[in-house]
Amino acid sequence: MEKPTNKPLLIPSMYCNVFGHDYQISKKVTYHVKEYTCSRCKRQLTTNSNGHLIELTPKFKEINAILERIHQSRTARLKKKTLISSI
Image (cartoon, rainbow, N blue to C red; front, side, top):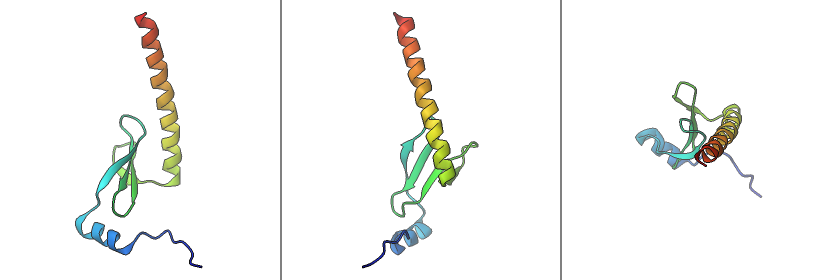
């Protein structure tokens, strides 16, 4: 029985090394913070506090989850507030 490996395939990673990554938005955390994934080699990136792309580590996954929760509660509260004030 073969053990599953977490290594990306050799051909997609070679393609990305030669031609560059093809990043697509995989998750919108807030209006400004997004998570990106390469469609070929599955490399994951996110935006940091300065707006630069950095590797998506478990630490940044946790930060993004907290940011998303805060953002969703804030937008829900603002939506509710505007709905009440329009009546």
